[in-house]
Image (tube, rainbow, N blue to C red; front, side):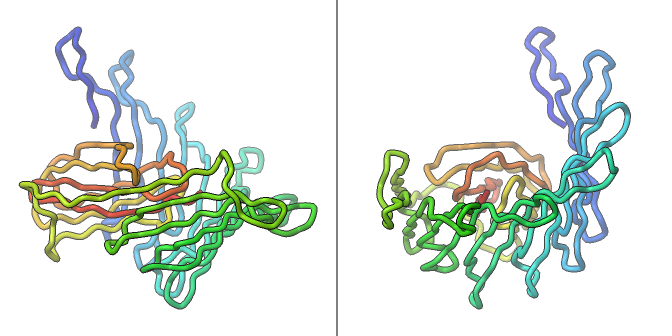
Length: 302
């Protein structure tokens, strides 16, 4: 439950609240968001997310609903399939609710492919149009360093030629710690080559070790899982501390700019499903507790 300070009354006033329910494996199966109604002094439902899982505790379905006129109304649904190891997402199929037919309409799909080393090779985006799948875009990854691509080529589907046209090429370099150090984009010239244009940019990233009074966590009692990877509009957090403690969650980009931050009261287990309104790129999530920090990089791909 979140509150904000009211300087007029010199008191904390309710703002919004989240309610979570779990299954026997401690997976979140529902998250309900409520807002405080000052007129009625009561909590009003706002929206909720519902999840289902497979036997390996991987999310297979997420359904979003909004509250209206005393009832939950379906909005969107995403279903997931995984590879044989249940570690990598093969497909994401997107649906929207059709109130006229009271059923889910398929709207789009993302299909990922991997090689034998679990490197992600391609990400194909398709749209459901007139009863068939129509290609929209294709990202192709290559030259991997510990499953991190050094090259990404983004292409758009050409409905006239029925083929993919080159659009943008991204080149990435990393340091020995697998941290991104350089990112360059180039635009395809119809003459048949990549070139720098006014819309392209180069980003350079620098890192420096610091000696502080808080040590990084380095024991097997602490664990962090972020999924799905890559994320699109949401990312799930499954965090286990070695001991109960309050902590702060930070999300920041590779430039070190803080995008979001929130406090979590003392707990040893933390589960959350965080909405992401972020462009495609690499980001970091940091958990700063009493006993140290856990930092993990994650990718957003749209």
